[in-house]
Length: 337
Ligand SMILES: Nc1ncnc2c1ncn2[C@@H]1O[C@H](COP(=O)(O)OP(=O)(O)OP(=O)(O)O)[C@@H](O)[C@H]1O
Ligand SMILES: [Mg+2]
Image 1 (cartoon, protein in one colour):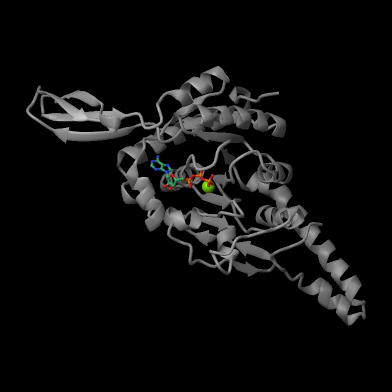
Image 2: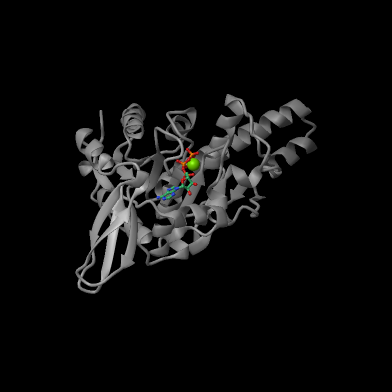
């Protein structure tokens, strides 16, 4: 078994061994065997206890994976579903901060870790809860990391869930591989990208990575897709707005005098064309929204701060698409073989 960063106690079994005069080495072995057995039983049950299990991946860092994973989880939870969010980013876990629950502590009871509570009853597990100093880098060698991930999967008291969303560090690292090997019945991968070509190139890698994991690709989400500015002017009038790098952009006010212009921060439509080219579904796009950055810093996610806003609506339609694909059954899912 891999090394364990979180200690448990097997209770009666080891106490009994103590009474019977077992050596400390024997006791340690019994403790380990007991925990392994318990974990195996729990992991087998996870497949039936958690209805939908979705991994959120991206080839490139900083494209908004954690924002999207958190947003998807909140969107599902605000529909009344029982939702878990597992933050597997061990070196840079930022999901708790995005949810404003970074001060929460995980309770360990009877060898099981109890998740922290987020908005809308979201159950959250993150390495951030276990770090003593958030500014200290986590430098864990392979086996310890593996042990931590196995504990996050096998030792957490999730209870019954309608969905579990799993956020990862960027790239095709060990973490998604470990999760896919340890968590039974993963339903699919959502790939997050921004529209520029370098990010898209990396999405192709993510899709091929999902293929090597034998996990279906549910689709691609294009994040930071366009930045819309709005204003009012004389109804029907034409106006010119100075865009980035000094290029004037034209807009026309409608009958009510409202106008809007969408600036393609990183170009746009790249996510949809990459999805078409790679023959995977396009799940939708999320606008570039400065409120997302503010929300990430303040710990109030955009979906909580502005539940009826444009970003929340975009998340909702992405969630509709994901649920439609998941609930149509495995036949219609794109499984790359
Ligand atoms: N649609 C958006 N509009 C504006 N800012 C965004 C948007 N999505 C994400 N951001 C901002 O971009 C930054 C990176 O987002 P996030 O942490 O979600 O990316 P990530 O892919 O999880 O990064 P990492 O690879 O480091 O895990 C954050 O500051 C976040 O607030
Ligand atoms: Mg992240």
